[in-house]
Amino acid sequence: MRTPQVSPPGDSQANGLTASPRVMVHFDRAGRDYSARQQLVIHYDIDGLGGESVRAVERSVVWYTEGKGEEDLGVHWFERIDRSEDLPNVCPRGGFEIRLPMSPLSYEGVIVKVRWCVRVRIFFIDTRDFVSEHVFDLGGILPARAPLERLS
Amino acid sequence: MKLPRLFGKKRGHRRTGSEAWGSFAEGLFYSALVAAGLLFGGTVLTGAAGIGWPTLEGEDPSGGWNWWLAILLLLIPGALLAFGGSGLARILQGWGKSQERRAAASASVGLRDAMGHAADEAPGHPGVPTCDDLVNSPGTILRYRLPIESPESWTLLGLGLFAALWNAVVLVLALGAGADLLRGQTDWLLLALLAGFVAIGIGGVVLFVRMLVLTTAVGPTQVEISDHPLVPGGSYDMLIGQGGTGSLRALELYLELEEFATFRQGTDTRTDRAVVGREIVKIWTDVPIAAGGRFETHVTLSIPSSAMHSFASEHNAVKWRVVVIGRPERWPAFIRVFPLVVFPADANGSPDAAVEQDAFAAGGPG
Image 1 (cartoon, rainbow over the protein chains, first blue to last red):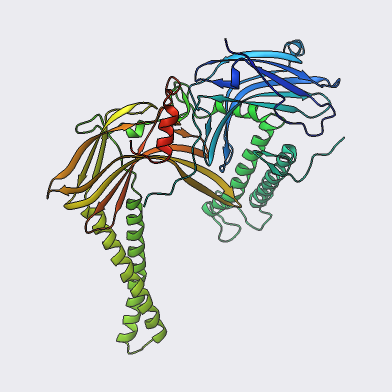
Image 2 (cartoon, chains in turn brown, blue):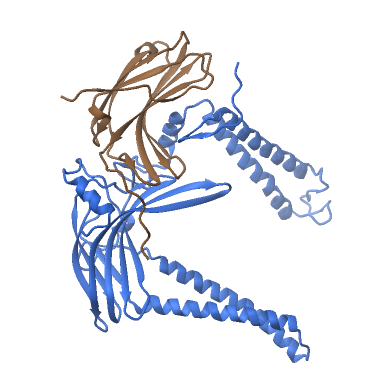
């Protein structure tokens, strides 16, 4: 039995927010390492809402590219909860379970990188939204090395 | 109330600037286009610009304008309205929505085939390109013949086009100069210009013929493979055939992994490439090729267990390829490239994955 891993508050953006939300995400796999088609079980806790009223919560599992090129984003799973009767189930505590896809696998290349993450985005009534991102690894691909000279 | 920040910085993969301001500025731009289109179109249609529309009886109040010209003139406001309107619609559609929500919506309404996956994506493998174009040519001995992706062919075509166009210009200049000479006039400036143009034209033809001879003299390279797409950890039978005459000092076969990143630099769009993995599959030395025959041999191609699969998104790609380098005795070396598609393996890499990956990155023998 693997020890579930708690991800500290991830990269977040909260322009002009009076509250200081913190999203703690609990991954069900140690090291947040997953294989293709594996089940991903997530639980999260949101602290520091500071009395702000939440309008909606979006939860997603996405991949994006990093590196020299423009960023590309792919959404594997997305859910928006904005009905007031459903919000207590997802905020300040919630979770979800999904099956990961076959590809693209996480990749640490030289000029191209592919990263997977769980994003929790909170929309407030009186102020701007807050997003928290928690990266995990899909596929166990070893990183690429330094670029090689072109063959001539 | 805090106003959004007008100017932002790039921090890692994020920008600190406000998306709302960006969308607002874009909206202003597209609104200006729509306004210009309405103003221009209105001016043309109402005749305020002094352009009178012809009557059905054929009278032309503007004294020269006709239906075709008037409709042609409406193309400009039409294009402004179409471009501005579609831009405004896109901004309104995405206004107030998160990046993930927009991406999820565009994925669900994007170009999808009957099976529900993107048209250029392998079924069940998001972000992995299809290999349809690589498996539509059966091999003579093995299952598939790989298509060639030779940069030499494009260089040859470019040189040929340049030589033809340049010499056409030279011919026009020469005809003008010849006509002057026949009339007994000598335009020294034209003759001096012509001499320089002729020298460049001859140089272009010589370069083209040399490259043509080089490309055709070494003969075609054929690569066939036992299966496609490939998977990490898999081993495949590969047939290499090299035609031509004479012998080669060496024939080298490499497996390469290359990354492509497309980015904007000012108003330009650039693509950067980096070879991040190379494995020597096999090197043959002193390869004789009999006249009318060809050198033909089989090798085993292995893909490292923990290697990245082929990947393609809008601005980024990871591509696999087989590179054949021939070093003829009398001619310069030639390079021929054969693209491959590697799908992700079903299971994780083997315990030896790290060792294999090290050998692959270092370009060690397979």
